[in-house]
Length: 98
Image 1 (spheres, rainbow, N blue to C red):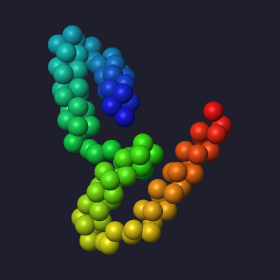
Image 2 (cartoon, rainbow, N blue to C red):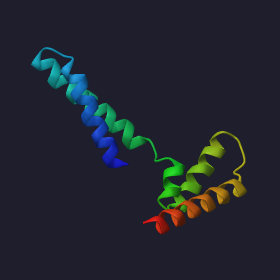
Image 3 (tube, helix red, strand yellow):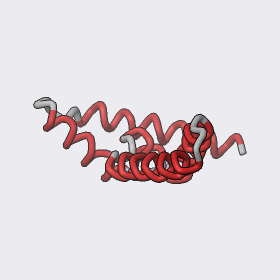
């Protein structure tokens, strides 16, 4: 995911900076937009679905429990187990197709 974030930041900066005319504005906008996006991407956690697909089940469970607690909901163990099982099935299919 970090590679995607860096590529996204580079593309965003290129388009954003191209819109400015003065060199000083380009340098300033590049700096602040790069700083802003790096802060945003460093604060946001990876998605639970991505964590599960990469096999980080404990981290995904912790994140989902935190989200449930924040939303004053109960964590659904069965739904989480179903996600893990679906991921295992998909990984098996991908493994056999290679």
